[in-house]
Amino acid sequence: MIRLQNIEKVYRTDTVETLALNSISLDIAKGEFLSIMGPSGCGKSTLLNIIGLLDIPTKGEIKIDEQKTDSLSDKQLANFRNKKLGFIFQSYHLINDLKVLDNVELPLLYRESSAKERKDLASEALGKVGLSNRVKHFPTQLSGGQKQRVAIARAIVGRPEIILADEPTGNLDSTMGNEVMDILLNLNKSDGTTIVMVTHDENMAKKTHRLVRLFDGSQVQ
Amino acid sequence: MFKHLLTLIWNKKKQNLLMIAEVLISFLVIFALSTLIVFYYLNYRKPLGLEYENVWVVSYSNPLKTENGDSLKLFYKDLLNTVEALPQVKKTGFCSNNIPFYQNTWSGSLKGNGKEINNVDNYWVDENYQDVLHVKLISGRWFTKDDVLAKQKPILINQKLEKELFGKQSALGKLVDEGNRKIIGVVEDVKAKGDYSTPKVSMYMKVDTGSWHFIQRLLVKVSPNADAAFEGRLYKTIAGMMKNSNLEIEHLVDKRKSINYFSLVPMIVSLIVAVFLIINVALGLFGVLWYNINKRRGEIGLRRAIGATGKSVSSQLVSESMILATLSLVIGTFFAIQFPLLDVFDLPKEVYLIALVLSILFIYLLVFICSLYPGKQAAAIYPAVALHEE
Image (tube, rainbow over all chains, first blue to last red; front, top):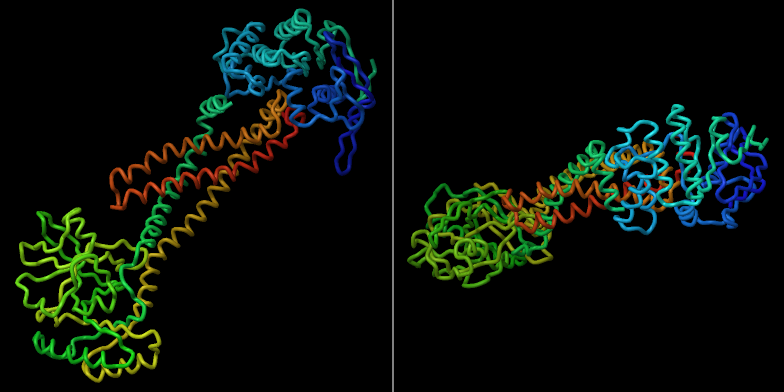
């Protein structure tokens, strides 16, 4: 489903050149739950950003569903992210000025859908993560675990085929982390959603189908 | 998306209050200035009501040590004949000190048709006044020499006074001031205080024996080629006849210019102040929007990640600014509309309404321009970087 071939990412400043990813090749199958591990600064998030088409590799090629992504325009990329991908971040990235329901509806605003349709889909997504009773709350009124569940609801509301999660349990205690992990596992199992997750937690990684380890920008496992 | 933006703005009302207040204050200032400009412009477009080119004004003090009207009348008649005999003089006429474009005013009240109109400009003129200044007669006639014999003193009024006294009826032949005066003609309104002024209610009375002692202005219509040499000759001729008088010759062209400055100076000063204010407001708006974008980098990154294009991020920020401007304008319009409703400053309603529309358009344009660049910058935010910063 996702094919990365010889991906290289170099960050350049006037004086320094940093190799963030070095010749990464990776095939992720449809329905797979893959975790990426490695020490801080090894390029995990950079790799996830590249898979999520939020960043462009310096070299190499990405194909999603056999479709090359390097020649897509800004509009096509945005459309692709909107329809195919769902993002979950360590720091949730919820808009504090919007209620939970409005936050979850966000991805649907960028596609053709009626207000009713958006509300129904958002309510359904919140139901899946067990937050039906928090729709009118603001993110600041929620706990960390609840915030991350809202972020998951936002990621799945558009029914994407792929979910990219960047340390989704990083800011949570073990109980809440397990709750979030269970939701992701359930999504993968019941809906067949492909999930790529960056994590520092070996226990979480063990629950996934496959583990990829990075070190200094190179794939070591 | 519109509803989403409204929700977002409403939920951030405290943060948006500063920008709403800033736009509101600038709108009110722009409205005040637009009102002034529109008022002047509409006045400027109206006809002046007279011809001032080649009209010189001779000012003098009473040359005779008498206030006897008959003696004065004979002396002035002699003076008029002498001046009119000069080759480049076309016509001359005596009038009171409140000549158009002069700062002097002479006003009183006039009763008629059951009403009393105050602040009516009173012009004391002779039968030649119309030929000198070409005040346009709308109906009736100008003064003649025989008017001195009339039982009721003849007067002419301007259109504005006719309308105030008689509405749509004609004023011709009507008796006013408890039957002491009779309206014999109606003239076009004259913008006596310059091109940007509003014509006032006016009436014209004929100089008679009792009024010669305060008549101290002689209007001289000269041919277009009358030069400084001729002006010197005119001065000498009059000075020869008025040995004890202080003489001064001025041109109505210069007086018009000078009185126009009086109107333009406050407008120019207000414009300069407004331009500085607008620059400040523009910089303020720009700063607030720029600050908002920097504060919202994470949100912008997120929106890009979930499907927003750069263009839609940019238009979202511009639209948010325009909605905020609309909120300010709704409040501002509520205050501005009170001016025509309560008839503040006695200006025509159309002045306020045109100024209101212009101010609204100006504010929209200002906010749009100020939000364009920050919007463009927001569109250029790299989602991966913005999300990482959060």
